[in-house]
Image (cartoon, rainbow, N blue to C red):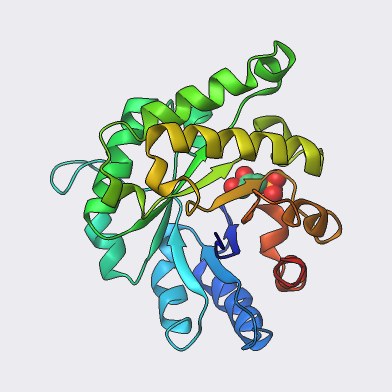
Length: 250
Ligand code: 13P
């Protein structure tokens, strides 16, 4: 089963609209028409409109980093799925470890966000991953399978077809310590086996991205693994040059 290669840039809390214009202009200028890699950029909310306009004639796809679990209403400062769709957003990162860690997002909240995202026509990039303590205690698989099962609880087969999973070991995020290709492949295979238990019909077609200190010099080794279908890139997605090199390695 061939799955698309996906390289997504999670810009996190970086780039004003002006900086976004600069970065996207460089990305669009170096975009290759002969690539089959699906390229996604996820700027902060305040830069989505600027990004959307600049990407209108590009094959680079727009993503967001979060959304509300509610449809609309009195939820001060929240951004709804339909607002994202109306701004030209196609993908949305859900359950990032920084949201779980600093903003106390739980599996059930993440589950509600996945449901509203898919029901509104967005494609979620659903993040899972263990902390260093959990890995050292030998609990990585248990943690990741729990996050997966709870996250997708109640999603139909049709819903699951729109899902991309990202495995991001927390100890590898922003630390320069990446998982070795073998470690990452083992966990990706385990995630695919779990997806098969959840819904056999979609396990082989679900893209599973790796995230955590992906850089131009380690990207090819990771992306050559059979169950690694792409990367969710933080720091290295903030420079057009390094992000393009990662896309070329895919
Ligand atoms: P870094 O690539 O900066 O480690 O970030 C990874 C990440 O959290 C992407 O979502």
